[in-house]
Image (cartoon, rainbow, N blue to C red; front, top):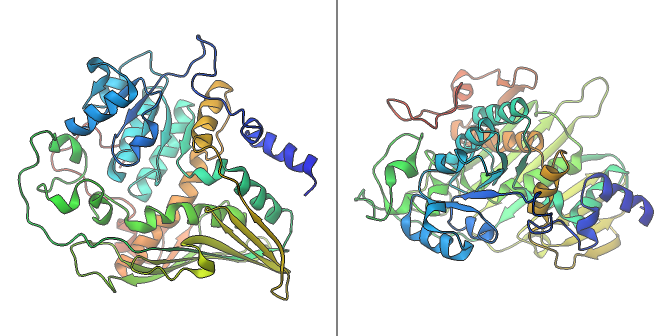
Length: 426
């Protein structure tokens, strides 16, 4: 792609300034234009957002104190209940870095309060919540950015653009992987929650279960009640840019997934091994396409010496692309014809795009519609693994058509007696 064409493309998607090292920071706007925002969730991911926050929120007083000190906010702006932030008319936006089961409920409440939202991946705990979040964003005309950062990374954007321009012909298959060695979470018995934690608030609208150390901080990822497994955790990135490279803007027509706990003897409910295949039926003469996602959580034997990445297979070649900053293009004889590595970029470029989208009244790079289309694959894959059955999906009705029990898993049970954060229509 000629340099002038690439510059035009980068400008079109809203990151031209980022490429030049001039991405808008929160303190770059004029005093009257500054975006004021609150951080919801101050744990492992939330730490990336301490700088510049006007509020911090967490039901764990220990984490809240760390966030307040790092952000420089006073006690009035360090809160345990997110509604305190949403009720403040001076706040323009929120960043949601809480556990998965809070992502959509908090984001929907924020949309309804007229706040713009940066929501970490995956944007929902289940398929139905993703539908409701997309609707809330559009109904309230707010910016909602999904935390799939590759959408704002110049290296990845340029690679995807080259795929769409035909550098390897028609892209028919994308094969993504997430291979790493995760920790065993062991077994534990219920205990009392730590005194500094408002556990009732932490559980929120999810089903109430007793506190247990191996399903709390970070380990909540591996439980149906709170997380989406590693397909929804790290896999969210690879699945997103795999679909992006395929050029798919619909739901798959068929989902087949096999997996289980092949390695770990512990309490986690999600698989440590999975192979997931999504078929997109060709409509109106279009060619069918396929997306494959493989996950091993007990190995460091990486394909192409990279723990995560995507291989795109086209009619005249192949591209390997990784969020680790690697890109190789092969011809149809499997010869490398181009190799490129990314320089270390600005880690806040995706967040800066969110701020710029608010200030310039535009859709962000990872708009919630793209988030919905990608997390749909996560939820469908988890359902297919959990039921052990292949799924047929109607992209118009957004329903599983061949399995009523699988279709019921598009949503989730909520807390008995209701909860103020349960999304309407869930």
